[in-house]
Image 1: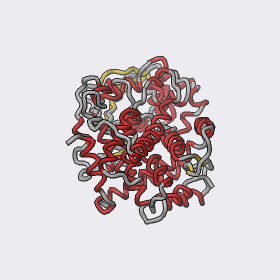
Image 2 (image 1 turned 180 degrees about the horizontal axis):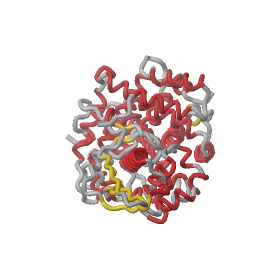
Image 3 (image 1 turned 90 degrees about the horizontal axis):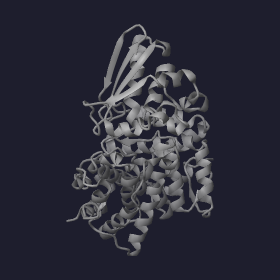
Image 4 (image 1 turned 135 degrees about the vertical axis):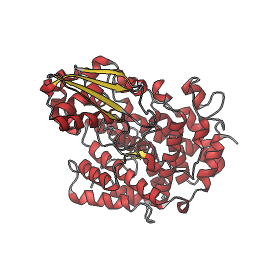
Length: 456
C-alpha cells in the first residue's frame, strides 16, 4: 500500500472521539498562540503589503485573522499564513524543523468557513494537518534545510491538503489524490537568507492555499500520483537528492501516536535555531553580572545545518540589514541578549538594529561546529564567553526551552497570547478571541469562530 494511501485511510476514518482530550486541548492552545501572533502581525508593514496584493484578485467573505479584511477562501488562507508566520514567533515541531500551525490552521479555517463546517470539523482538520506536516518533516531527517528547502513550505503543503480535505469531507481515494496533486506545489526556497527578503513569510500561506486547491481538485475528480512520497520522482527523491530520508515515517503511527503535543511554542521572536543560545547567554549574564563592556569574546557552537541558516552569510549576520534579517542572525541575537538582558519584539526595532554597542559586540561572536548537538531532535546551543578580566564562562543548553521535553505550559501560552494582543487589541477583543479559541470543538460554526477572531 502506498504511503499516501496509508495516510488517507487513517485520515478518512479518524473522528473527533478518536483524539485524546489532552491532544485536543494542546491543539487549542497552539491555535491560540497562532491567532495572537496574527493579530500582532497586523500592525506591521508586511501585513498591509500582503493584503493589498491579495485584494487585487477580488473580495470574498472569509474573515482574516486580526483584520477587517475579507477575501476568497484561498486568498484568506494565504494572508492568514503570512500573519501567523510573519513575526517568526510561531510554533515549530522540533524534530520536523517545521512551523506546523502556520499552514495547517489557515487551510482548515478557510475550508471550514467555505463549507459551513463546525468548529469541531475545523479543529480536527487542523490537528490532522499538523500531524501530517510534522511527519513529512520528520521523514526528511533534517535534510530539507541542508539543501535549501524550507520544510514549512514543503511539509506544510501536504499537511494543508490533508487539513482541507478532512474538513471538506473527502473520502480516502480523494485524499490520496489530494496528496498526489499537492506534491507538485510543495516548494519553498531559503534564498531569502542571502538578502533578508520577505519570501519566507509567504511560505505557509502558499502551502495552505496549495492544500485547498489540491483538495478541491481531488474532490472534483482530478487524479494525482499515488507514490508522491516514495516514488521514483516523488518528494523525497527529488527534494533530498539521495540524502538519507525515511518516507515510511509519513504514515508511521498516524492516528495512534500524536505529534501535536511535541510541537514547541517559541519563547523568543527569532529563528528557533537560536533560542538555546539566547537562554545560555541570559543565564551567564545573570549569574555573573555581565555587561557588554565585560565581554572580550564569544564563541558559539552550533550544528552545521542550522548554522547555515543563522550564521551565513557572515557579513549579514554581524550587521543585519532589517528586522527580518536579524531574526536569523545568531551573532545579533547573542549580542543583543548580552547587552540588553532580554530579547523581545522591541529588540527588532530600527533603533535596536542600529545600537552601536550591540553591533560592536556582534563582531566578537565566533561560530564553530557543535559535535555534541542534538539536532534535529532538539536545537542545542553552547556558549563560551571570555571576559576582559580573563574569565572563561561556558554554558550548554542541550534541549531548547519550549521543546516537548521542556515545554511552555498552557498558562505560559495564554500569557504569551496576551502579550501578543496587548499592542493591537483592547481587553474586550482579547477576551472574545480567547474564549472563541479555547471553545473550539463546542459545536459552534466555523464562520462564527472566524468572525470572532477578526478585528472588531
